[in-house]
Length: 362
Image (cartoon, rainbow, N blue to C red; front, side, top):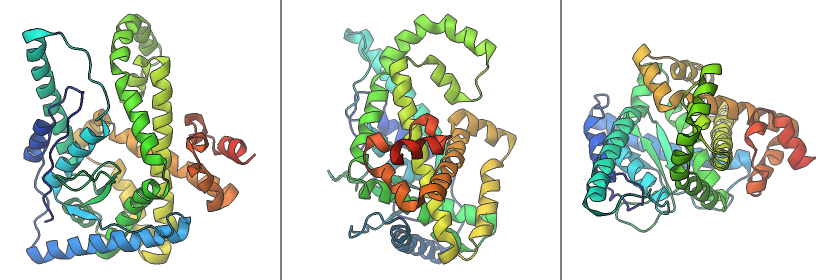
C-alpha cells in the first residue's frame, strides 16, 4: 500500500540483534485490509496531504513553529513501520553502553544467544504493535542509508484504513484527525529546539542504568517480594518501578512525565482543532475512545503485558493535565512548558496541574 522502507540497523552497545528484530517483526505482522491499487493510492495521497494541512492547523492553534518548513510525511505499510521502528530504536540507543559480559569464547557465545533472543522478542512485540499503530513521529529517524537523523513522520496506511473501516467513520475526516495528532508530535520536536537532545539524554541515562538496576534488584529482592505481597502492582509499570533504585526511578519519573505531556498535548490539539476542520470529530472521538478500551480478552491481556494500556492512561492523564492548564492560563500559558527542561511538569504535577501552574507561573 505504501513505500517499503529498507533500513540498516545501527550499532549499539545493547545486546540486541536489530536485523533479526526487523526481519522477525516483518514476517510475523499480519497483512492489512484488502484494497484495490486505486484505493491504496488515494489513501496515501490523503495521508500525505493530511499531514501537511494538519500541521498548518496545529501551528495556527498553538503558535509554535512559525516559519519552519513542513517536511513531507512518509506513508508506510506494516513491515515498513516495523523496520523504521527498529532503526529508530537503534539510533536512539546508539550511545548507551552495553552490559558487561564475560571475556572469551563463553562470553562471545552468551552474547550471540542474548542478542538473538532479544531480537526475536523485540520483533514479536513490534509485530503485535505493527497492526495497531496509526502513525508515529520518530525524532531520531531519517531516510534509509542516510546520515540525516533529524526525524520523520510516518503514517501506517493499512492501519488507518482498518481503523476507519472498523469505526465506520468518514475516511477524509479520520485521516485528517489522525494527522493532527501526529503532526503535533512532529511540531513538538521541531519547534522546541532542546527537546530532542533532552529526550535522548534521558533515555540514555535510564537505559545505561540497567546493569546497576539488575545487580541492585538481586539485593533488594526480598524487600520487593514483601512489598508486592502487601500491595500487588496494578500493572507492569508498577512492577518495573518496584525494582528500580532511587536514581533510575527519578529518571523514569521524568520520562513518564514528559511522554505523558507529549501525548496529552497532542490529544488536546487534535480535539481543539477538530471542530473547525473535521466535521465528524465528535463521532470519531467517541468511537475511537471506545475502541481503545475494547478488544477481546486475549487482546486486552496482550495490551496489558506490552504496556499498551499504560500508554492509554498516558493519553487520558496527559489530556486532562493540558486541558486544565489551558483552562487556567490559556494556550500561551501552557507554552511556558517548552521553555526549558526545568519547566516540564514533574510526575506528581501531571495529576495536579495547579501545582505546575503555581511553580511556573506563580
